[in-house]
Image 1 (cartoon, one colour):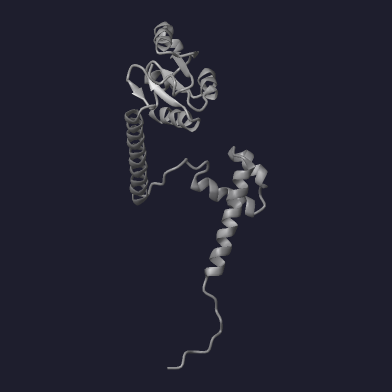
Image 2: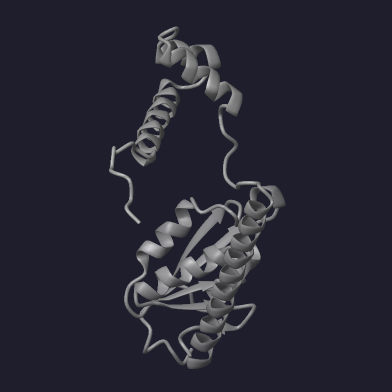
Length: 214
């Protein structure tokens, strides 16, 4: 390999899913042929982030090393996670190589390709944010509000406020009655009193001013 003098160590990572019923034999052979000196082997889903061997391999990377996989989907099946892993590799000063797709960030062409992939991923994320924002605005115009459904209906809130304000029930008793946490009742009562004070401050007052002279 022409880069052996420039790059310090090739660290390989092989993965198969437990449910696939496969083994890593083909991957291990390809990684060894490519010159990987240390190989971390894992049996876990590619959609999981908590993969101990993956993180051990990433922790081993030093400046000038190359992280090698047989195929990109062995590293991750999520583009978002794949780019996150790439950022960790780059932050350690190491390169990345995928043998099957011929992706090699130790070369200018490989770095440019990964930058393009990252740009497309960021564009996709921004489009999703825009669609979500547009959907929420459309829902508001139709009188629907996004987010979690309230724990208490409007009628339940009114009933709780009446019984607490009339001292018929304490906040904890109302919470048990409506099967919610006492803090939910506390927030409801505090919000109601705050709104009541605000309305009182904004209400017009009789200032007994003299009639306006025309």
